[in-house]
Amino acid sequence: MTDLTDLGVAAIRDGVRAGTFTAREVAEGFIANVAAAKTLNAFLVETPEHALAAADAADAARAAGEAPKPLAGVPIGMKDLFCTKGVPATAASHILEGFTPPYESTVSGNLWNAGAGMLGKLNMDQFAMGSSNETSAFGNVISPWRRSDGGNAAMAPGGSSGGSSAAIAARLCPAATGTDTGGSIRQPAAFTGISGIKPTYGRCSRWGVIAFSSSLDQAGPMARDVRDCAIMLEAMSGFDAKDATSLDLPVPAWEAGLSSNLKGKRIGIPKEYRVDDMPAEIEALWQQGIDWLKDAGAEIVEVSLPHTKYALPAYYIIAPAEASSNLARYDGVRYGLRDLPEGANLQDMYAATRADGFGDEVKRRIMIGTYVLSAGFYDAYFTQASKIRTLIARDFEQAWATCDLLLTPTAPSAAFALGEKSADPIAMYLNDVFTVPSSLAGLPAMSVPGGLDGQGLPLGLQIIGKPLDEQGVLNAGLALEQRAGFVARAERWW
Image (cartoon, rainbow, N blue to C red; front, side):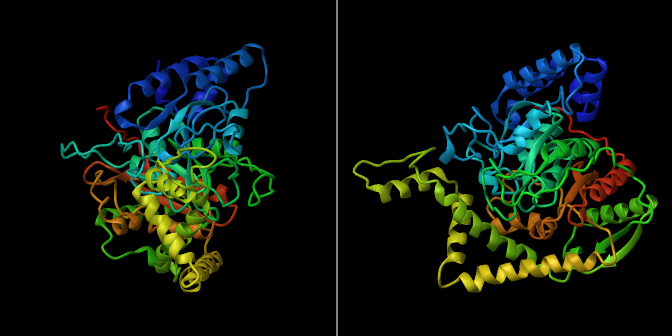
């Protein structure tokens, strides 16, 4: 029999329903893989008891002839940004060490109600700030991929959802939750050869998700393929009255609507995404993606998004500004770390707690955010960045007059080695050059694996869609997936 941990969400769901294997057998297989992969540092907390309890409930329901839940028998990983009742949630930061939420985030609650079980909480960049998973207070996540030149350099799994991407690629879980503020689902998916979708802003509730940048943060699924992402997204989405930005709309049947026939669809190729010094391999993959979509029946048109070059600087003003505000609540008073030097007053405690609790990248962004929000600079920075954001959204709106979807690379390179870019924040920030514009506009966007670079590392293609057109994004992703035929996986070394 196939190793059950080689199966994705749809195959596990269907196999459990058919009685081909039990949910407990699936859970035990993944629990064993998690226990054997400590080297990757993908999990911060392991919860085998949660996964087994959900599996036993699925098996008992099937034995009783009850209608199966959508994710019955499927164990998943949960990014540590989601609050999970009775299980620590740290956002990979020392400042939240010891915090155990007494409540469940809406997204995780939706998944448990759909029958999924939790294998554990996944490592990430601290407070979701990073593109390589090197800012976690609990150590780097290491990608299961290695360069084919025989070097043993530890590779970055992308960020901030690096624990999620590494765990899926290493077969530690069939799917996981991620969050995407400026590319934190799509870039790690591209780096590790998996799929991931950021839905339209508001599709998934932000309630119970530890905040980074409230106008940008959006939860989404990461999985081995497009169908699995569609299944997960259906379970995660839905209106939530506890989130003021939640969309009060029915959840479409995205899996049932999957079709790789793109006849009649127009795919836009934004000319501004042909950035200087783009590697030839990225350019070649992009052209290959264009050819694949033509083969699926789509018409290719060139479009212009003239304000693209301002997206990254605008993002790195808006996101830190919102982070500065959101992270002000971590002061050592009510929960998490409290650093109280002898003889200290309240102000001293605040300062000591935040100095010890936050990592360097988080401190950098808080300081940038505080600066751009200060009285003398608010109009010069934050107001201008907000205007640029409006112009970027307008660029997309005008592009939709001539196309239905956009095709771009996901990232400007394949994965890099841990430590290669950590000394240069600007080089690290440039990893988000293709993903940030759609985040600023709140659009659905997805990364699917398209091939390998010369070093045998995965490369991703990105589909961007109109607001609420997750179906179009998933369908174009499916067309790419079928034509790419990507089956490469990391050879086990851990």
